[in-house]
Length: 244
Image 1: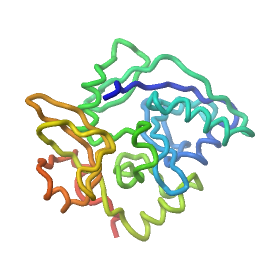
Image 2 (image 1 turned 90 degrees about the horizontal axis):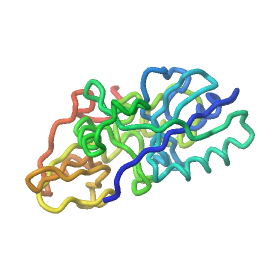
Image 3 (image 1 turned 30 degrees about the vertical axis):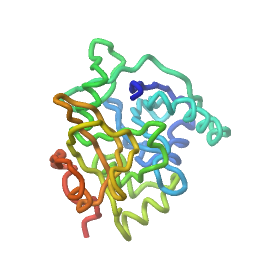
Image 4 (image 1 turned 90 degrees about the vertical axis):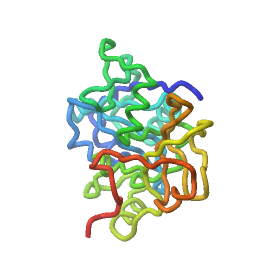
């Protein structure tokens, strides 16, 4: 299993916020400069192409974190779609995975650096799913409970994939959504299907020949495989449908 690494970009210029507003699922204008907010850029099918973490310093300066194996593709995406925007994407300071107040995040302060294995385990336990090249284009934001983590704004203007994402929220609901499970034996691969209705999003091997994973699944489908379903944090437990 490849080591998880992250890339850090700085996006600056008069159109920085405007361009990202038309790309990501979150309302960029509401972001703060005190933490990295998880969000996504989706494809036209409403599936997550890039999982991102954004920190907004101002409308003209936004920091972006992304899994390293998607960094080059992301830079090309910005170059293509932002060709006429007055903004520039460039590599920023080294970024380190961190756990602050029990939550996975990032810091440019190396003294706050957390071992990436510990970061992954904490992220999985907290339901903080992340996207790599292996899981790009596989999952919709609602399936990963991104809206329950503040990563989707259903009231903002248009962005890539919005029509499908909004329709799923206002008129339907996903058939599969995020669960935390524990298994024993061989650790499954990222993106592996454990059956027709259970797919691995993130996974990590743990002690005593066990593993922890975030999966998208129909709840009933988990009953047919030999795993233990664990509780996610309260804000992420339960159904993902819009409250009527």
